Length: 281
Length: 222
Image (cartoon, rainbow over all chains, first blue to last red; front, side, top):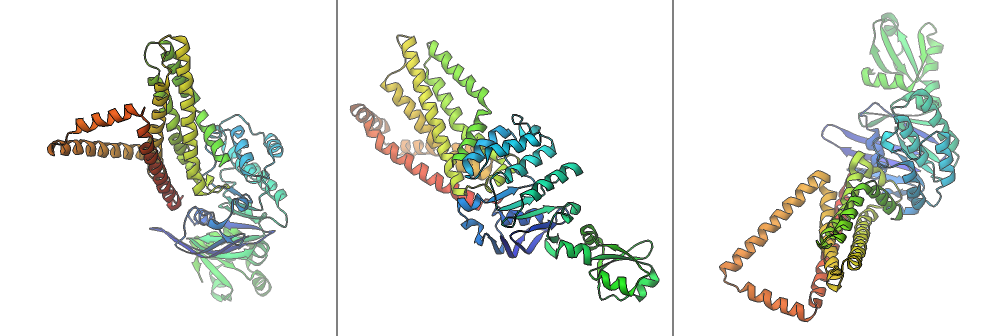
């Protein structure tokens, strides 16, 4: 669905260098701290930024070659952009109706009612949660095959986030794909099939979500344990008050060979923290 | 393009109070002895400039970035702005002529005549050219800066005109004679002699500004 090959975009103090794939039937997550390059990646995919080099293909084509009919198959949520905030949902309906052949007006209005979204209120008067819901409802209102969602859950409370992710889960089928970004990794752990972690503009990790949670682990070691442990499977190390905290991709190896050490299940947050604050081994 | 037109129409209608105010002003002039042309010019200016307002709306909260992800292209976006401006000015032209006709019925010395219609058509063409020039400026420099650039361009044009007049004076060219001769020709042909040059200028202005606007949009990064 999306193919990104060696895309580079340079700014004064930041460089994006990214390669990734979004496959049909898969929910792919892009996780990274604020400023890691998530939005730049999304904007490059959507043709809003021109990369300095590299290739981006959507449905097998360059974004600039997509026909209007193919663009109708895209559903987009952008973190800092949407319909003018001076508009109401009632204003948006005829626009979507005119733009998308597959727009289901009745279903859209039903969903708005289900999520208690006022139709006559200006978007700028909406709460953050309401605004996020409208953006997602718009993205899924026209049978899009590919959803590109940049921080769709930003600023939402846990319940609203869960509601929206549930909505997206229901939307998925084998012919559709979702690319979603978030800086709240727990949102994506239970939602995505595939995870990319971006750090400082570079993809530093790509794993199936199951592999990330099953194979990665955090070892908590005292000075003595750290001095004697086999280090070839350790990825990152961070000094702690009690000794050392280490990230490994071979959780099983350490569980079998060092049964005495304290080990925790790996999570996206652990990987991010270790990359940000730890030392690469 | 239809979706974008609906969007711009809806955004313009958010400013309906201003439009009603201009319509009331025009209605007032229909009943007063002052020429209704004055109010018509204002209505057309308001409607013609509403395309600039829609570009500003598109820029607020980076809304234009999202618009480019919808099933539209940058080319369609630019064309839509010109179509929208044309539609708004046409509405202004129709409203103006309706008011002129009303004035004719209300006051015996009413304003509606062939001259009035030609006058409102001329206003339409002037505003069209003005709006066509302003669209790429607004797209390039945005709302506030766009206005400053427009003022700067107007100042440069005024300086060029004044400079040309001074040059003509220095060269002792009989401009009055040329103008008089031209006016005679215009009167003889009921103004028809001006149609072709005006049409050519308008086509050139429209085509060139649209091409510039498209180039600006294609280069734009969001």
